[in-house]
Amino acid sequence: MGRRILIPYLKAGLGHLVQAQAIAGELRRMKPDWDVQLMDAADELQDELLRRNFVELWKVLLKMPGPLSAAMFAVEKLAPGLVRALNRGSFRTAVPKAAAHLAAHPPDLIMCTHWACAHLFAMARATTSAPTAPPIYYLYGELDTTYSVAACGADRYFSLSEKVSDGLARLGIDRERIREVPLVVDPAMVTSDVPRDVLRRGLGVPADSLAVVLSLGGEGIGRTLPFIRAFARAVKGATLIVLTGRNAELLGKIRHQVRSPAVVPLGYQEDLSPIVASADVLAGKCGTGFAAMAMTTGIPLIVTHLGAPNERGNMRFIVEHGHGWYCPRPAAFCRKVTELAGTRASCRDGDPPGAPRRREFRSGALAIAADIVESLS
Image (cartoon, rainbow, N blue to C red; front, side, top):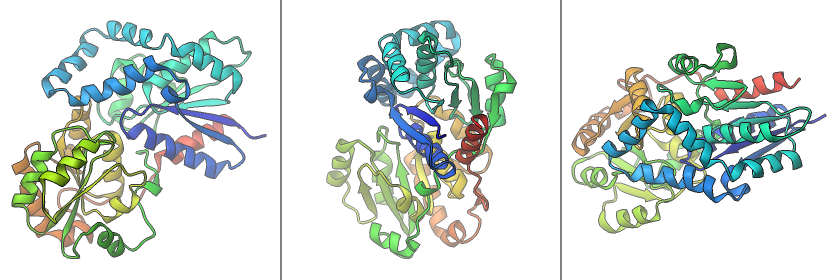
C-alpha cells in the first residue's frame, strides 16, 4: 500500500524549497506509488500570522544593517526562553489549521525543511486525538552553527555536519535521534544535458570569458550594486551573470544603471541548472542551498555578502574547508575574479585554486529518502 508523505516548507529564501524538492524527488523515484506532497505551509493554510512572522519578517531581516540583525540574533543566545515563547505565539492561529489539515489528509510521515514547520506540526499533532500520530522528521540546514529554535519536537533530525550534530546534542536532543547526511542538493538543479558551450552562448558568455554567477538568494536582497558597478569598471576577461531573484526593483536598477556587455542581469529563475552548469565561479550570499550547490559541484564560491547572521557560520565553513573565499568589499571581489580569470583553465578543467573540485556527488536527499522508506517499511 502506498504511503503519504507531507513535506512542508516556507518561502524564507530559496534553500528550504530546494531541499524539499530534492527530498521529494528522491522519494518519488524510490517509491513511485507513494503520495509525496510538497506544501507551502503559509500559503496552503492561508495563515497571515505564519506568513508575516516567518516569511515577511525574514525579508525585513535581510534588509537590516548587519549590526542590527546581529543584535536580533544575539537575543536568541541570551534569552532562548523568551524567543521560544515569542515563537509559540506566532503559531497560535496556524496550529488549529494544521491540525485540521492532518485530520483531513493524514500523512504517514511529515518531513520538514524549515524549523518553523516542524514546530507547527509538532504542536498540531499534540492537539489531535488520532490513535497514531505521524512522525516528524526535520532537516536542519545550517553547516556550522545551531540555534535553540532547532529543538522543534521532531522525532528525527538530519544534520549536515559533525559540528551541527554536536550543537543539536547540546540543545538536549538525544543523539539517537540525529542522523548526519551529505549536503542536500537536487542534481537536476546543478546539471544539464545541454552542452556547456551552448548554455554559455545562450547566456551571452564569450568562449574565452570566466563565467561568474552572482546570487543573493531567492529574494535578491542585499548590497549588490557596488559589486556589479566595480566589476563592470575593473574586471577584464570575465562575465557576471546576476540573479536578482524576486527583486524586480533590483533587476530594473541594474539594467538602467549598468551598461556593460560583461554584466548579464536575470530575474527570478525556476530552473537554475543551465546557469549553474555554465558557471566557472559562484558568488554572493551563502545560504545553505547556494553553498551546497558550490560544494557538491566543486565550483568555487566567493562569498560577498552575509544575508543574515546565521550565514557567517556557513561562510566560515566554506572558507575553512577550502570551498571558496570571503570578499566582502567590491575591490577584493574584483581582485579575486581577476585572479581566477587569469587561470580560467584550471578553474574548470582541473582543480580550481583553493577550492578542490569534488569528484563524487553524494546525495543527502537520497540518504534522507532512504531513511524515510526504511522507517515506514
